[in-house]
Image (tube, rainbow, N blue to C red; front, top):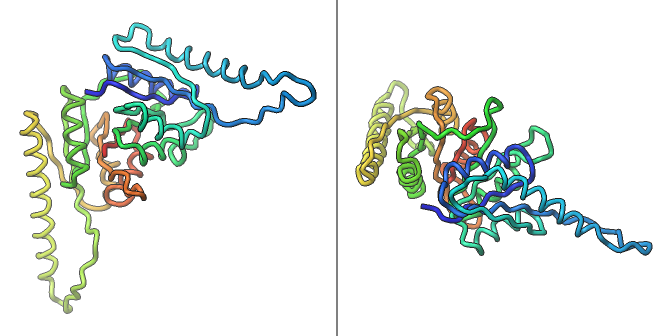
Length: 290
């Protein structure tokens, strides 16, 4: 189990929700509330002023994180707060690398009050660049409290990262039901050009797709057996992103655990942009696992 959890906070409601989520999901861990103070110009020393603005900003932000930490009163683990000066997209990945962080929980929106997802800047960078699981939390607009997940969805395609995601789901959510979903999608066009009236290729492609699906599902079941857990399996056809998002909406999924490729210099996502799309658009918390 994880022992050091990083929760970046900026005062937004979703960063507070991320902290509430971390407290509930990691009941005996060490949670670090980290606030990054972005660089700002301090001209107060001009004209004979004494340059106290920096001290005032740090004091104000310390008060902010202390106030958020109080939301975890009674937490059985430990909570510390920290301020770091710099650009969040640089500070957060470096902090994970240098401070033994094992998981990150982050809100999906910033504090600017707009509908713009924080993903696309800070959170997207964190998900792509850090080598540990990252959970992106968003408000549903109805209830910002934490609800322990009962139905976990793991998009599964037999890749190394999706196997890690399935193992993670079994370990992290021992009381929840887990569904492994395989979305059958032709990634490459065939060079074969059938003659008019020749439909044999359609049967061959269907047979290949069925064999692939059976192989993927069998691997998911073996992983479940290894974890001594039951598993539900499902197969869908079509665009993977749309198939996963539709499954979430239609089956009352509480949490998604999805695998994505590690830091290979380009941070390529599983099945192209599938994981990125799911993290951006899912209405439930999503954990990205390397």
